[in-house]
Image (cartoon, rainbow, N blue to C red; front, side, top):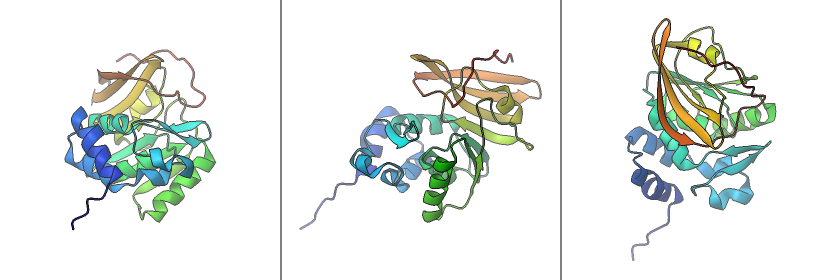
Amino acid sequence: MHVVRDNPRQNMVMQQLRPNQISDAGILSALDAIDRSLFVDPAFAGLAFSETELPIGEGQSLLSPLLEGRLLQALALQPHETVLEIGTGSGYFTALLSKLAHQVITVELNEDLLMEAQQRLTELEINNVEFRCMDASRGVELTERIDAIIATAAYAVAPEACLHSLKVGGRMIVVTGKSPAMQVQRITRINEWQWQTENLFETVMPMIYHAEPKTEFVF
């Protein structure tokens, strides 16, 4: 007799993501490959694949699967690219990025969370991630320009330091504004002094640690 086994990861992809236009094969493969339950408190493991945010400690939470999928699809990473992630958290989104990009640089203010995330990714034999402990409340300015940046916490406005760290043609996905009217933006650097902003969709996301209102960067 053939037994059909329940696969929560496949159910997440088929029931939550595909019906909501998450169609990129690489993203769906990454979401199916990385066991989300390894990145949450064991008490919440049964909810790991549900369409909800889950606490990961230190006042932070894991984004919902659909929001993660939509952010990744908006970022449209290519296999040769390097991406900066602002907000390591549990390391789950970092692991997804590692499957889609050549190299990931991830920054996190909370050292305990960063070390736990690094341990999880080491156990999964993910070795294309560089971990940095730092305050990114004013953005991150890199010494070398980068292909893509994504923030897993919201800013009042897109941080200027990040935008100047993009290569020409590079893009940043960032949630800006104040709850409940927050906007997912894709900001693309079109030349040395100009950036193009696209408002993609509305969502709600916790603000980054130490976030401060600031003057909007004009471009």
